[in-house]
Image (cartoon, rainbow, N blue to C red; front, side, top):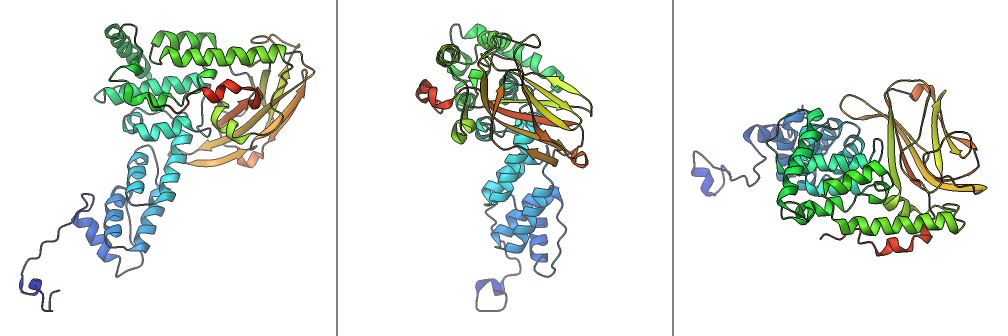
Length: 392
C-alpha cells in the first residue's frame, strides 16, 4: 500500500475508517503488537476493545485470549458488558459462562447496579430457567423481579439494597392510583415486562397465604393469570386428596425443567440446621436437615406439627434435584455438587440421606438450592392449556 502503485503511496497521512465504535487507537496498538509477540497482557477494562480490534483483523489467537480473560474475570461489574460483547463478536462460550454466573448470583448476591444493567431479554432467560439459584422460595423471585422492574423504569434511583424494596412498593402504590382496575403489566409502562413475568412459577407463590395476599394487593400481575393458576392448583389438590395421588413415579425432565418448585437456603456457617420451605405441598410435609456433612429429607407425618394438611398415604414420592454451591468474592463457583434429578419414595415419617459431603469441599457460607415436583405431571392436564409463553 505504501510503496506500490496505489494512491496511498503518495499520501503523508492515511485515514482509516473503523466501523466498530468499540475499537480505539490503544486497542489497535495491542492487536497489531500481538502479531510480533506471543504473550499480550490484557486488562479486564480493555478486553472488549481489544476483542473488537482482534475480530476486525481476524486474529484468532488474540480472540481466544480475550475470551479466556473474560471468562476468568466475570463479576458483578463486568458480566452484562461481557454478555453483550460475547453476543456481538460470536463468543458463545463466554456468553454461556456469563449466563451461568447470573443464574448463580442473581438471587444469592442481589445488587442494585446489576438490576439496573440487566436487559429484559437476559432477565427472561434467567427467570425461565430451572437452574436459577433461588434463595428461599418463588415469592422471592417475584420480589426480585419487582425491584428489577422498578430500576428499569426509574434508573436514576440511587439508594441501597436495603431501601430498594420499600421504595419499589411506594412507587408501584402510586402507580396503582392512576390505573384503577388495571394491573401494572396491562399498562403501557408495564407491557414490555410481560414476557419476563410470564416465566414466574405462580403456582408456588399462591400456595402460601401471605405471598398470595401480597401478589393480589400489588396488582402487578393480571388477575386472569392468577385465576387460571388457582384453578390448576385446586384440581391438583383434589387429585391429591381424592384420587390416590402418590407423586411422580418417573423422571420427566421437561416437566421438571419447566414446572418444578424452586427453593433454596443459605447456611452461613457449619452446624446443625432443620427447616421446611413455606407453602402448601399437597400433603407432603418435607423437612430438610443438614448435620455432620449430611443432607437429609424426611417425610413428616405424625411426629411434630405440620404446616398444612398431611397425606396419610402409606408411601409418597417426590421428584427432586438438590444442588450445593460456594462462591468466592467475585461470585465465581468455588465448589458445587448436585444429586441430578431423582425420584424419592418415602413412607410415613421416613427419612433418607440425599447427599453426603466431603469435608474438604465444604466452604461456608454454603448455598443449597432444590427443585421439587410433588404431583405426577401426566395428571396435570390443564397445565398444557396455560399460555406459559404468551407475550401479551
